[in-house]
Length: 332
Image (cartoon, rainbow, N blue to C red; front, top):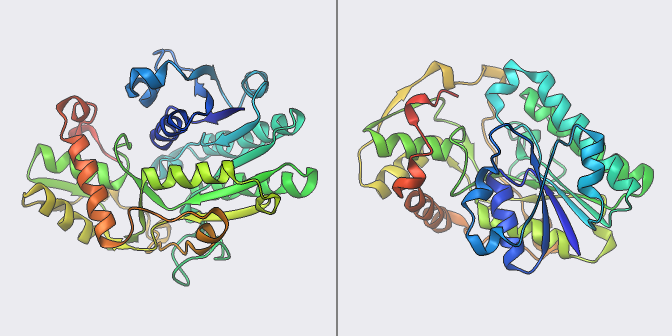
């Protein structure tokens, strides 16, 4: 059985591919074609993993390349997405084209190719600021950025293909995933990278609270969704989160303690979201994942967060890894 993973060259995608190959899956990676001939983070996978992966270059916005990518596969995991929230303020149409149109294109081809399971990867950003915590799958949608709006659209298109055409779809909704290889646009890498290079960090709002989930837990939840044979999973949306939240200010203090380094916080207006766009708090209700997927985060609570942060900091502490990141150039 072969599984197509889109967005495979990214942070979560590369970890997912590595984990799936180690578990014996046959994986085809759909990689966004680029003139640099780069496979993204897939290039940093161990050699024994890379040689077992099938690479395919294309674009989910292009129907012909999607047809070729899906052909011969049995299941699809859709991680392809534009994700940087600040850039979505600047170029919202590009988010519509990739996140909504691209996803719809992939759904249509998957239907035609009779894919056995389509796993759509969502985001907790679709919920916006918490109205009630912890946040279950029934929490109202509240798009506070163009990015969030397009992810709502993508999820709803996926679910509509299940309802309209009986495509076997499940939506997995991770909260704030973190770990090695994460883009410096994300809060944890930007704090770590800046703190490692100097004593001060330029940061945006420090009051929001987030539910941080270590990347191996997120990947395990996605794999469990792929494995489960119960047809009742189709048409379902399932949260993946640690059920523990922490403010950005507290997070900085934790990283400071692990690094054994005093960090001076400098507010940077360029990093602050528009007032009505800021998501104040996210806290996952993961009961459904525990019940349906038999999934439970290994990195849970305060101790789990500490463990995950230490592993992430250790990875960034490797000079070769750290050289990929330049805090001085990081703006948004």
